[in-house]
Every structure is written in C-alpha cells, then in structure tokens.
Length: 175
Image 1 (cartoon, rainbow, N blue to C red):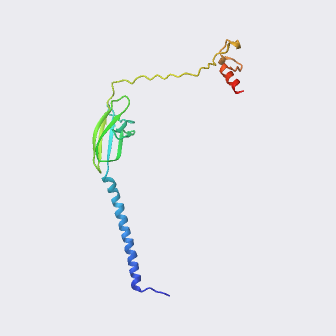
Image 2: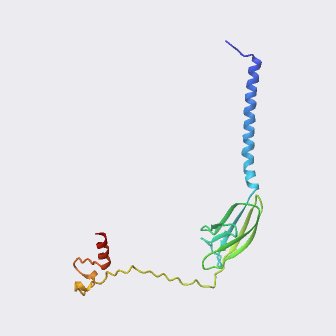
Image 3: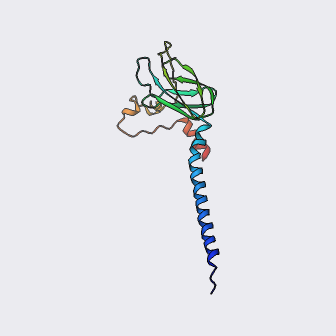
C-alpha cells in the first residue's frame, strides 16, 4: 500500500480549499458587478400622458422620433422606453381626435428621465370614408322570363334553381 507523506496531503487539501475560495470570490465579484455594468451604459424615459380634462390617456401612441421605436400608454396613461443610449430624444405623442405633441428629452446613462404630457383636442374633423362594393355580374334574385313566374325567387314555396348562360357556357366547355 502507498500512503502519501503527511506534508504533501496537507498541501493538496490547502490547494483545493484555496481554489474553491478563489472561485467563490470570482463568482461573487461577477454577480455583484453585472447590474452596475448593465445600468451605466443606458438610460430610461418614463412618462404619463393626460387629456386636456386631466383624465388618464389610455392607448396613446408614444414614439421616439426618428428612431423607429414606439409604445402605447397603459390604462393609467403611463409609458416607458428602456435601455436607451445617452443623448437627446424627441418624444412624439398622437391620438385620433387630438393634436400631436412633441417634447425634447435628454437621457443620461444610469438615470431615468420622467416627463408628463397633456393632449389637446384637435379642432379639425376627420374626413369621411366611403366604402363601395360590387357583386359579380350574376343576378339570381329575379326569375328568368322563361320560368313565367312573377314572384321573386326568395318568396317561392318550391325549389327553383336558376341556370344562367354563364353556367351553361362553363358546363359545355368542361364536357
């Protein structure tokens, strides 16, 4: 049997314990600095939108002008943009029936910029939208003159099928 000398065994235990302590210290250091590093490079914009009568403005479109980034206010009129690079931004709000509003906001790394905006009712009216639709050219609501029936088809008590010339041409070509 082989027994290591007492001195080398104690050194191996010391090395393993020191390695575990070193790894634990590195893990704690990594975990504690990650949130700080994540916060220092970006900022945040939060805000509240109200109507001209001081009510909560739900469903308002809030946009960072020129950044292709937007959000919608919640039921309490609040919005937020997270993880924004430091700099100047233009916030644009819009809601149908109200005037669009813009405000300049400066974002600082690790900080939250808070703003409050109020919508004003627009004096202009929306244009009317007219929707027109057309059915295809076949009208089967009236009976053919060959049936010699004066009553509209929908009111007849018997089953009447209407065969149009279009149907006849399709049937002849597929035969």
